[in-house]
Image (cartoon, rainbow, N blue to C red):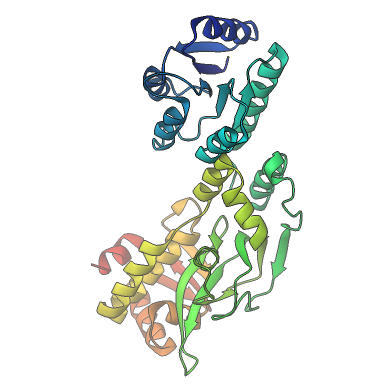
Length: 353
């Protein structure tokens, strides 16, 4: 399918000339004679690329870029400024607002087409969907390393093996990396003076964790440990901020890949404070199913230490064992060693209310 380009240019001769060049290169071109009309067309057409003059009446190019950047449906469209101005201050202002490129008049056909092709190709790379696996995340990193702004990203972001109960990081330590789970299960937890643990969050394949302290420039507020032998991709602090700060499209793509579980944490803390042990065990089982059951099948088995389950619930292992025994008698679950089989998930869910 031919790519669509929106050209915003107030000079009729220039507008016609550029349109002809782009159409000969098999692009589908829409034109606007001023900034206001350009914004309207961009919002309705959602073109693959926008080329915009800076000096225009009514609404200049900077105003166009500012307005489109505030709209989530147009903020990621590649944007090329077209101008006769060559002062560095104008260049910096445009790039600071989020422009992807700058073409100075006069220009030749090849210069224009090269700039258009490069920007569309980069945007296509970043529009791709990457699976939440080791291979998918590696594809994402390889793709963004091809961009000029991100060529220095370390190639050390490779999967690393962590053994069950191996410390990933400790509460109070200084963060210098984030983690992406490609295999296994990871818990983050807090411990009191007596060594009693409370599990804060659970992570599985496709989840990122450990990035909030980096964003807040604060020590870790919890500790992290695999619940089973696991594989994690480590992303170092410099690479993390490069992905967030050096390219607008990459930042939006990367942010979309990150998961934010603040609401989930708040809900779990409320339930911890007010719910009975029976309700809290039921809630923990539903959480485990939601996190780890493939295709969300109703009948599902998983191995979990009673100690870990107790830390999730916020009670003793003995209380969890008694409650699980009750659930077994009620034919909600089956127990074999440390493995729990879910038999009646709907009823377990209703018990939380």
